[in-house]
Length: 198
Image 1 (tube, rainbow, N blue to C red):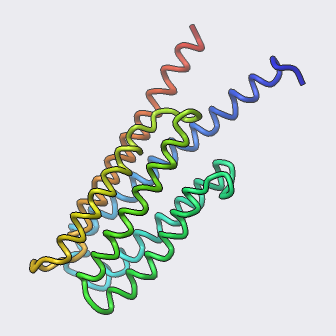
Image 2 (cartoon, rainbow, N blue to C red; image 1 turned 90 degrees about the horizontal axis):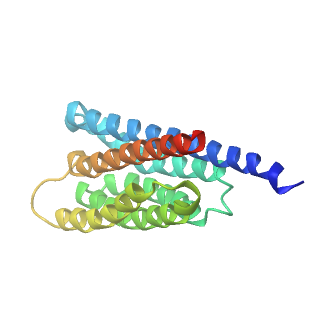
């Protein structure tokens, strides 16, 4: 196959990957935004729903990372997402166990997860920079997640009561960064299309 025949196929592959990432980021934004809204509106007064949501948050992250890695070359090519998948599964189980003992313990588990998942998300974004572009929001999100970890662990060691609303700001920032990433990617793709047309 000649180079000229390969170029359109490569371009289509990049375009398909970009289209998937936009859908992925918008989907993750929608989930996080809905989670935060439900936490503030209902779950703060319903302990059982709050517990389900707290376990479900890292479980959803595990599923999302698994699906994204599979769509982006497989788990072997995306080691950071494989690790994120495993860490998030373990975290969902650990949150369920911690909830049986104390909300403070749950918050410490969430804080530790935020640190690990933030670093792994940052690594994934850096790895994608050359192929996908517009990854600066995901890099910032990963760094912010690691910083949020220290805040959550410190809060868990304080005297103030903690609960699902202690996690909500972290989830809200996640929603914001996923939205920014999706919009940035859409803008980047639009610019590339205009240059190609010109």
